Image 1 (cartoon, helix red, strand yellow):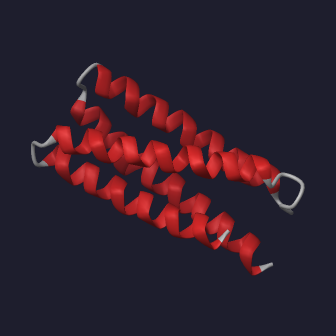
Image 2 (tube, helix red, strand yellow):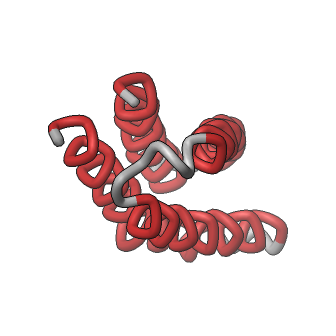
Image 3 (spheres, helix red, strand yellow):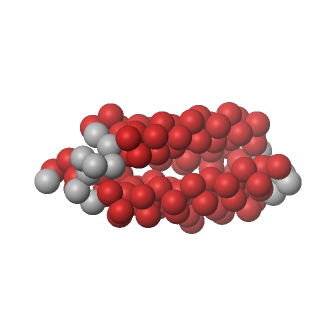
Length: 112
């Protein structure tokens, strides 16, 4: 679980970086970072699913994962339509907060 927490922090840092890159005119780098964020998310999702019986608050974690997944889908669709300002907004207003909330939920499981 500590590795998930660390990965989530890296994903948060990556999301902030992607936001910065879009706002400074380098969406191609944001695409690469977003692909890494998605890969990290898939790893976390697979781990959480495999630990379903071991997690005390599995339903809450799954709810957080569902929100992040939906947001990542929106970002991918926005990249496909080159709506970079929309991507920047989604990252800043939704993704960073959702990843932070997921990290906090994971930390609470670790502490209990």
